[in-house]
Length: 379
Image (tube, rainbow, N blue to C red):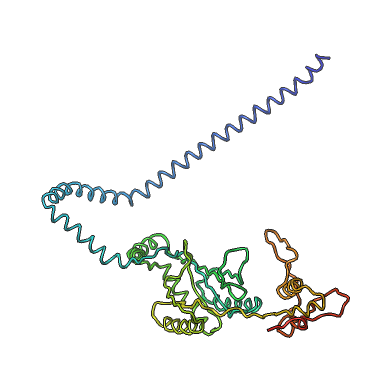
C-alpha cells in the first residue's frame, strides 16, 4: 500500500516542483527587467534635465559667484571704515530707523484683534422686530437674487433666524439673517515666463499692500461690499451690516455711548447721532443699539371669574402659551439633523387680539366652552 501511494504521489510532486520553479524564474526575470528599465529611465531623465537646466542655471551661478566674491573682498574694507567712523556708522543706521518709525509705522495701522482677509465676509440683515420667519425668509430670497448678480461671488450661504442651540446675541430672532459670501479665486491665465514676469512686476505693489494693510484681496472684498450695499439701498426696511471673520471680537471698532434716564430722549439722540455719523467719510454700518422692543400682548386674568369656572390660572396660562407659541412634542431625526415637531393652533386663529379672545381655555371639558376673552382682559 505504501509503495503504491509513493508511486502515485511521485509524479504529482514533480509536476508541482516544475510549476513552482518555472513561476519563480519568470517572476524574477520580470522584476529584474522592471528594475533595469526604471534605472535606465531615471538616468535618461537626469541627463535630459542636466542638459536643459545647466544652460539656464550656469549663467546665474556665475553671476552669483562673481557678486559674492566682490562682496567678500569689499566687506573687510567697509568694516574697517565703520569701526574707524563709529558716529557716522551709527547715524547711517539711525536715519532709516527713524524713517521707518515716523513714516512706515503710521501706515501699518493698529488693531487689538485684526480682521482676517480670507476671501469671505458676512452680511447681517435685520428686518423690523416682530417680522415672522416666513416673511423674513421670503425677503432674504429676494436679496439673494440681487447679490448673486455679482460675478465675483463663488458661493453663498444663508442662515435665517437664530439657532437656539448656539450662542447668539439678544437682538437675533426670526427677523434676522446672516449671508456668508465667498469670493472667487483670482483667474491666472498666464503661465511660465509670463507668470514670472507678472509676479515680478506686481511684487512691489503686493509688498506695499502688505505694509499698509491694503492687500489685493482686501481691496476686492471692500469693492464687493460697496456694490452689494448699493444693491440694498432701495430696501429701507432692511438694515445691513458687514463683518469679516475675526480671531476674537465682541465689539465694533468705534463705539459712542450716550447715557440718560429718558428712553424717548435717548432714542431721539441716538437716531440723530446715527444720521450724522453716517455722513462721515470712512464710517460704514452705523447703527444704534437702542432698538424697538418686540411687539407684545398683555393678558390680565380675572381671578374671581376663573374661580367661578373652577379654572387654574397656571393651567390656563400654560395652555395659551402652548397654543400660541407652540410646544415641541418630539424630534424627527434625519441623518445627523434633529428637526423639532412643533404643535400649535393654525396661524389664522392667532393673528390678532380678537383671535386670542376666541381661544377656548377648557378643551375636552363637558362644560360650555369658555373663551379667553371672558376670563381675561387682553391689551
